[in-house]
Length: 283
Image 1 (tube, one colour):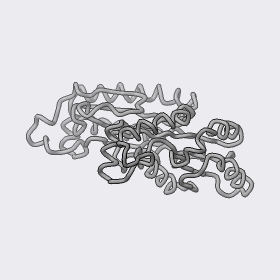
Image 2 (cartoon, one colour; image 1 turned 90 degrees about the horizontal axis):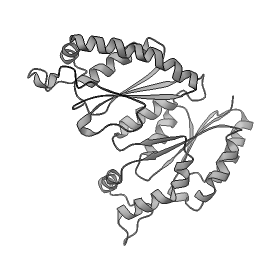
Image 3 (cartoon, one colour; image 1 turned 60 degrees about the vertical axis):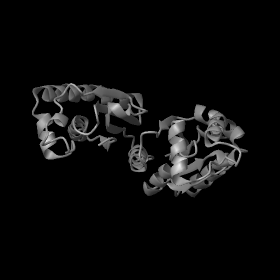
Image 4 (cartoon, one colour; image 1 turned 45 degrees about the horizontal axis):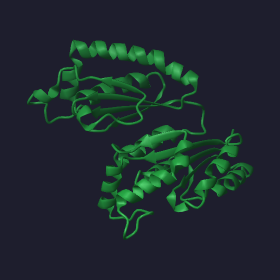
């Protein structure tokens, strides 16, 4: 079995540290801020030792003098090792807010450069690395906890038997559609607990809300049809060789209907022996 190497990279403030720590907690041997030229020697040492089979390294703008050789450094390794490059990014206004909240300087920033300009410069410098990425994750709408859960769901079983990871994400349309979604379903046609005084302040994971949503005939038919669609699609995605599938289910605010449906579909899909991760983004 080829050693698995996950390369975490991306824009400063996008969550690389959170993702790397999640991989470390999932059994990966992790190294922060490793120059790209050292990835090959590191992989050779681990392969010869025959011990560590899962390695994760982070590369960022702090190693910008090495970034020009990323393509020539990484591409030859793909035939020898199982390598996946994950590029994290976020909307500029989100990155600005994160830097201001943490009061940390941007790696490219200076006293006479605005954060916005530093972010713009970093986007250009990391362009070749983004182009080489196998997966691009926009973390704009994710909390650190949600990003950690997503990372673990994707890579906790890396290097083990092939198995597709399915992430079910509930969300509210008024807060925007999550990025990186493969399949998107709108459940705003279902009866809305928001307009029931006794249910308005509850969540979709609370029993009264769950019972209210599930007792609707439209909900029952929708779940039956969606479950059948998943039974049809998932084996085809697995056959295609997909390692992960993101399914978004949205309602108006992401608090009531979509969490109920996500929880129900997740329970049905778990019966199919799939690796399921549930994220309630806006609940």
